[in-house]
Image (cartoon, rainbow, N blue to C red; front, top):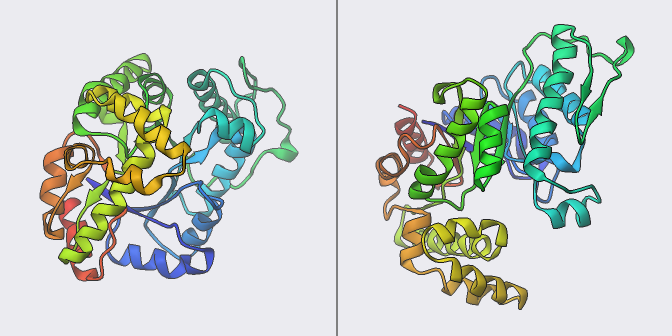
Length: 335
């Protein structure tokens, strides 16, 4: 199992952070498109590291177009000496239309076409094929020598797609190189819903599970001390309450027979009662949707027991004061 850690601090902190992660043996480092651009930190990360994988998890595809994103990903791939992986997701309708002022329709079909369009663009640049992509949502039919990149020392970037529901997950299995599962999940949901959807997509592209990588930011409650454990537990409760309040994530609660909780949490969120929402996350739901380790040393065993065979790559958010222990845990997981 690969392990990656976030490169989520300010730009000024990136050089020290990426060197720290590389020295501790992390396989990769990731950014997310939340309150900062997800690509600038990876450019700095590439400059100040040698071997660590660099990826977005995720960048919002539908806030952009295939050509601009293909170009950006190409530049990062070449500058990082082949270490960049483009992780993209659709976001939800409200953000695409109201925050980014971009069109929204048929998100799974649009994401499928978006990935195929980028692959057509890269085939033009890397293989010399004529650019003639004509889809329902995107058309790319012009590429002259002046606008064709010339620095092609490394292969085109790999693509991972994020998703929650079975339709988007199936699309990822069909057209992407990997899938970024939502952290609001469980081993049971992944086994019953996520993996079968991926398998259906892989079958459409005549590939098998060995050709595909599943990445997941599994939420882990742990702590080096009792106080740290309690603090970690409350942070994860808040995250679960937030995700549980969103209609887009209801499928996971429905699967576990707790769909009514989404109505309750959503109503509280609209009233701004965030602390009250957190109290609704019982120990039962915490144990279901997170990995709970009273001692940090238990993380490798408990995580592998819960998610072994379900994910290939863990996006960790666990940070420890004892960096030797953190390094030991990373090494144990990556054996």
